[in-house]
Image (cartoon, rainbow, N blue to C red; front, side, top):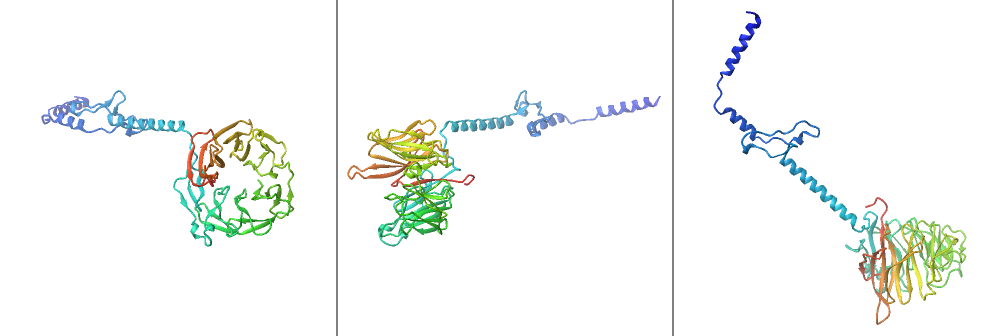
Length: 429
């Protein structure tokens, strides 16, 4: 017998012994059932690209697992996938619905609404909700007529970081002006009279009439006087006027047509052709175009008055007039007030095409005053007055906002006609 024959005999004997070994009855069935009852892990746990898949388990129906054939997915996996798909579908529908809605004022650019009412100054959300009073009129001593704060024109600085307002002033009340930060904390104060508290274009100074014949004081945010300029006698038109800044911030202009450099250099009397020689003038945000009312026409021109072009004409000829032009943020539109044929309206003029749209119209017992554009240029803040039937005085003031197409008019605050929207610096909260 060869060595191979001996090896074959040994292997044959070993297989016989293994085959004759005893296994408890039902043992294999118990092992199989126990294995089948164990919950397999979902195949997706292995990760994308894995070859680990879950296979069907044979055995009694109570031990089987529900699978999505032929993908081999467990029912729990399918449920999770369905929930994810439902969430994605819901998000898509929500985004789609928002796209169909009118755009909201961007919260990261339009901040708060500031306004004066009943002798106090308030700061609220842009739509007038959640008002916070930042002044106390009872803190002012003296006659009752002196106890209060107010003003006219813009309140917020161009960069939206500070507010400017006045205490009541008259022959009995020494006028005071105040600068506050965006939270309403006073950071500077100084004496001065007038109505407007015009901000310099760079938001670092304000100008006001001060004691002295024709003297205008220029003050920093801390209330410290930086310069005084004086209007030469006989060069200013009679009446009550406030100074206005030139677009470059280097000079002040008073009607009718006197330019006062803030560095103290020579005063310049403006020619009649200069847009700033009148009252109803305003420069575009870029400072490159002037808009003004000339007789019965709304005109745009270069800053020096050249290349003048009538945008809307015929006001006086139709028995009406135009006033209060105000530029949109992009400088392509003007809002203004028109009065004609027994009615008043707030209108929008497209500078390039001359197309005019009336967005609010009422009879002569109602008056309007544009106050501010939203930064996106899609809404206007304006004041509205109703005439008292008995006295004939325009009262019942309120602040409103409306879209440029005349839709979505919204009442913000009643009892005041003085307010201003805050334009937040880019990236601020």
